[in-house]
Image (cartoon, rainbow, N blue to C red; front, side, top):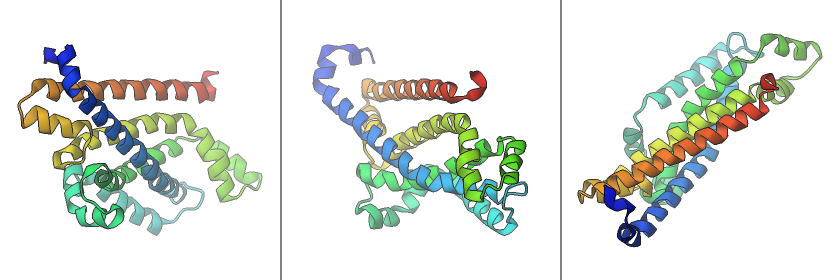
Length: 227
């Protein structure tokens, strides 16, 4: 493992590691955007149609909740393999960075939906009732009350979501998705190179720490309770 701190190691594998970091960041960033495009509306609908929501609808809430629970319960590696044909239909390939994005989105969206639901459920009911008494529409309540009031919690949830997707992207390397996980498997495991096993792991830990610090500070900055 100590050889990863030598100049010879970086001369031979440095470019490969940088490419792995780049691929991981691309997978995580693109997947996060699309996962939130799906998960955020689902989370909002779960809250709005809940028993104490502004537009209760037991049927919609139960069906969507059932879909979200199934999506969250499937192990990522199984899901990734199970939807390979769908992945190829959408992006034209089952492997590589593009091949990992579809299963990452499908797996992360239900997780994000629950994160959003939890954050919005923390909004003070009195604030919602005040907005309703002033004649605010459902969409106005969502955009001007729910989301702004829950923003600090949503930001912290965003950090958890991104870190989870980052972990999934490493798992995706098991079937040739590229990125740091792929390097750890191809070089660290298959070729018994401990430096290439622990090197990607170290970079993943560093990325997690950076993400968490950034989002913690951002959440604290926009939290009105801390001003």
